[in-house]
Image (cartoon, rainbow, N blue to C red; front, side):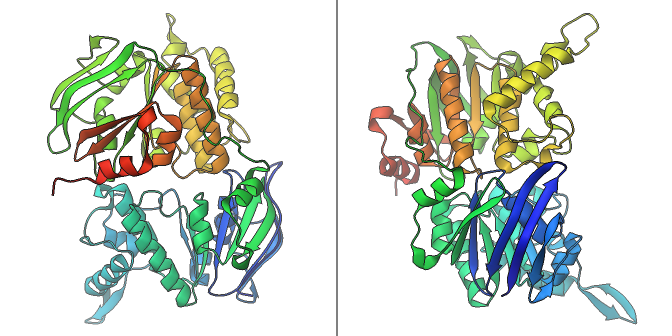
Amino acid sequence: MFLEIQRVTKNFGDVSVLKDINLALKKGTILGLVGENGAGKSTLMNILGGIHQPSSGKIIFEDKSFTPTSPSDSLRAGISLVHQELNLFYNLSINENLHITGFPHKKVGGLSILDQKTARIKTERLLSAVGLDIDPTAIVGDLSSAQKQLVEIAKALSTSPRLIIFDEPKTSLTKYEADNLFRLIQELKSQQTTIIYISHNLDDVIQLGDQISVLRDGVLVNTYNREDKIGTSQLINDMIGRELNHFYPIRNTKPEEETIFQTNGIYAKGLLNDITFELKKKEVLGLYGLVGAGRSEMVRALYGLDALDGGSISWKNEEVLHPTPANWVRKKVALLTEDRGEDGLLPDDTMEKNIALASLPTYSKNPGSIVNWRELKKNILKTVQATKIKYHSLTDQSVKLLSGGNQQKVILSKWLLTEPELLIIDEPTRGIDIGAKYDIYDLINKLVENGMSVLMVSSEIEELIGMCDRILVMKQGTISNEFKKQDFNRSAILEAALHTSE
C-alpha cells in the first residue's frame, strides 16, 4: 500500500477529535473524504501534513513508518497540502510564493546567486498547469479570490509531490476554472500521483473518487469504492446520522409591506452602475450573478467598506448620508463578508473575544465606559447555543483551530449579538458542510420569522431558490433582472446572468 493509517487517534486536551482511524490508499488513486465540519477531516489532513501529531496509532507511507513533526518533514517526504484557508504571503509576488521553500540558485564567478530565469520558467509552467494566465511578478494581495486559490494549488505542485491533499480547492473558482482543476487532478492521477480530495460538494467527490471515506464525530463510519455506485443521499445519511427531509426549512411568515432598506441609482466608477432596489421587513432578498458581476462589490460599497461615487441609500425612509460600518452597526445593520479569513475574524484570538468585538460599545454604556463582561458573557453563550458551534473552550481556544463551518458560525454569532434588524450575508455557506448549512438556513428562517430582514448574496442558485422571497440578478455591475418566488427557475436565473445583447 502507498499509504496506511493504522488506528490513529488525536486528542486535544480531554477532547478526542479522531478516534481509531484505519485507512489504506493505493498509489495513483483518488480518495474523496467527506464529513461535517468538526468531523475530523482537517485534523487528519494536518497530521499527514506534519502540523499535528497523532496521540496514538501509526502511519505507513511508501512502506516506511512515517512520523512527521513539522510541515517541512511532510514536504521532504513528498506530501503537499492545498489549504481551504489560503496559506500565501500576500505581500510577495506569485513567483516568490511558489519558491518560498527554496529558490533556485546558479553559480556565477564562484558565487551562488538566485536564478531568476529558471524560477520564472518554472512559475510560468506551474501557472499554466492550473490554468492561470498572469504575470508571475504580480503581488498575491492584488489578486482575486479565485486567482489566489489557483496560486495556492500551483504552490502545492511546485515540490513535485507524490501525495497531494486538497481541502475545498474550488470554493472560489468559476465553473471553467473548476473544470480545469478536475482535468489537472485526472492528469496527476495518470502520472501516479495519489490524491486526497476533501469537499462538501458530494457530487464532485462521487465524480472524482476511486474511494470515498466518511467521517462523523472523529470516527470513520464508512468507506466506499467506485463500483459501489454510492449516491449523495447515503453519504449525507452517513455524515449526519439522519436524513434531511427538508433541506431548506419551511418558513411560516411572509414579507411585510414596510420597506426598511432602499437604494436609488448608486454607482461606483468602473464597478457599479445605477443600482436601485428595495428590501421589505421580514424579507429574504437574494442577489445572484456570475464572477465579476459586482455582487460582493455592491454589498461592500453599501456598507461603506468601499467608496461610492453617487446615488442614495435609505434606512427606514431616512437617507443615510455617511454609510460607514460604524454607522450601520449603530443602525442595527450587520454584514458578513465573503472572506471570513480576511474581514470577519481575528484568527489568533478566542471565540469569546471575536464574538464580543462588535458589541463592546453596547455593553460599556456607563460613566466609566467599563465593559459589563458578566452580561456580555451570558449573551455570548446564548448566541453560541443558537448557532450550534462545536468548540472546546470559549475563553482558551483560538478561532483558527475551528473548522470552516464553525468559524462562519462565530462570525454569525458576533453579529447576532448586536441584535441586527438587517443581516447582509455574502456567500453564507461557502466551504461548509451539509449539516452546518442546514443549521445556518434554519437559523436564518427563525430570525426572519422574528422580524429580521436578510440580503443574501450567493453563487449557488439552489441556495437562493430555497431560501429567498425574491432574487435579483446582477450583470456587469448593474441589476439586470428580478425574479419573484412564483417565477423561480434555475435555468431562467442562470440565463439572465449569462445573457448578452450580442
